[in-house]
Image 1 (tube, rainbow, N blue to C red):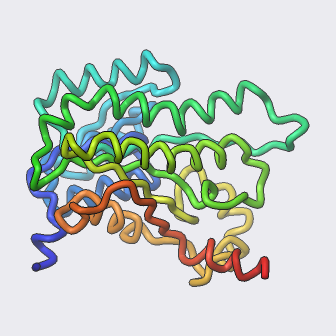
Image 2: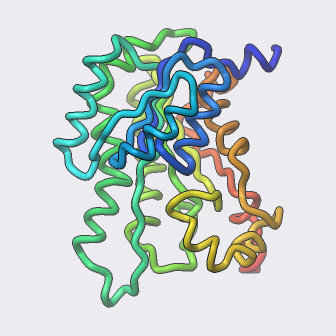
Length: 261
């Protein structure tokens, strides 16, 4: 029952897409600080991942262009060549686009939904043999998908593809959980509110105070808070949790519900 055992990921091998910065890097650091043997930081821009890996013992930067199905398969094959098993997969890579309904580009909608929804499905499927190799009845392999509170309720901005794809990802996680439980793989989603990430940087710089006030706690999230959520789902503490959406938003959705009353 000790926290050092309950939340340990000692000896585990993890893969974090979009792991070179933002929420992905926060999660990777949390895993490494709690015993992970290796965490692959997968990023299209390898310089960012390489810089992060240089400062984190056990982190390995790996170039991954996930904008195409071929890029997803190339990443899977690279991981197969390096590891006999994977214990934790964090599908974090994502994209966003904000534009009015009338002018929202079809190409942008397709690009955002592919990266946010198709890629987690494709990569999870491609890495199933490695995840199954890392799974045991008493210690399941883990898939953690990074959704969003924007997939729980309509956002203020015109991010149609982002919000729809994140809602789809939440439900995809439930479907995968139902399918993969018998293979000793859990599948859960974290739905973050505002955290400092590359995607949120411009918004927070322009309207950080307003964003903070939109939460019940009156602030944006700290790195250890998103890392702690992932650590729960990746460790013994979260071993009986699958098909769940864990909302980490400082009460943003709760406060929004009150505002509508």
